[in-house]
Image 1: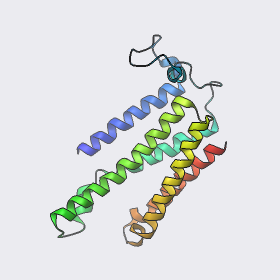
Image 2: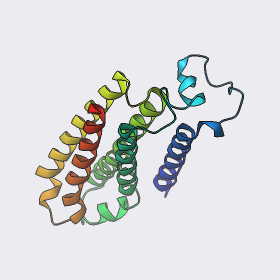
Image 3: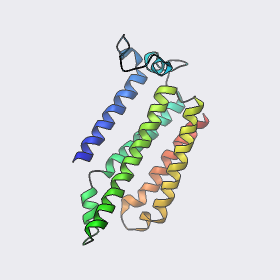
Amino acid sequence: MPGFVAAQLVGGAVAILVIRTLYPDLMPAEQPRWFSSDRSYQAFSSGRRHDDRVSAASLLVYVASAVLLAWGAAHLPPTRAVTDGFGNISQDNRRILVMEWIAEGITHMSIAVLVILMTAIEGSGDSASQLVYRVTAVVLVVLAALTTVTGARTPVVWFRVCPFVLTGTAALLLLASLL
């Protein structure tokens, strides 16, 4: 249950960030104290840097991030059922399995949040954002390959779907980095 609550909090924070990026006039007129006066606030206060339209690259990034965030959050609630599915295993093995299962979900959500923050603050056309998209795509393809040679060989349907989800989001991010 705490993992589900954490996933909801992260999802809510990301939703607020996306809304503030897409609709900058909803922001308060004065600058909050916790923002510095450097250019990072500019991205929030003036919307996107070049115009008021959402670029195709930004849209691809936000869709990929939403899928990745949802996929990561979906890992957390069934943790107990997954560990119970392994039957009678030692307490140490159970702890390692729980740790790895939760770490996978947190990794997906963290990558999604990083990509969303880069896009919201720097814009999708920024070279740093494009580098983050490309590195993230490589990480997702490596995770997809790992899942393909391990978990996807089991009869569990979600393990078989996972490489497609990760590769699909990687493709969207790579495409966004090229636009």
